[in-house]
Image 1 (cartoon, rainbow, N blue to C red):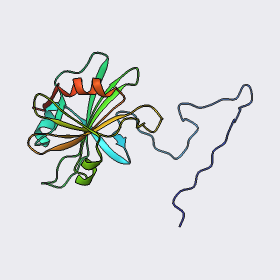
Image 2: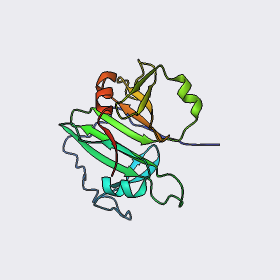
Image 3: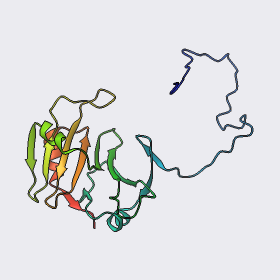
Image 4: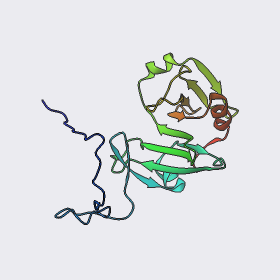
Length: 178
């Protein structure tokens, strides 16, 4: 069974004076769309929403009370969930320098909690169960990751390019979205 097939040209150089139609005007019979496109994450098509919309959809979702300087926030949800299913959301705080803090809905296997190497509890009772230090993201950059348990039993994943100590400080600013 063929799952995928790809072919890449390496070190392709165009002859001097070649024209490249960056506006795609050389593509015929293909319909293109301009404007906002849904966010894709891990193969899922998500839609960007506001904090207020997240509050109306999710019973227990957390956001940073205030967005750190130089960061911006984007909240995405998976559309068309069945009534009664938990809302799948991602809250991404990203800086222009590439630093990030991502909160993601999670209802994964509980045995993963046993693999965590350190626990940190915020003043509001959020429990951060950190994965072992030394992990990295797909690009090889250091990754701080934790399963977060709220006092009401809700769990979500926190991933960040920031050091663990900075993540702990930011976790003190996590609040239920209202």
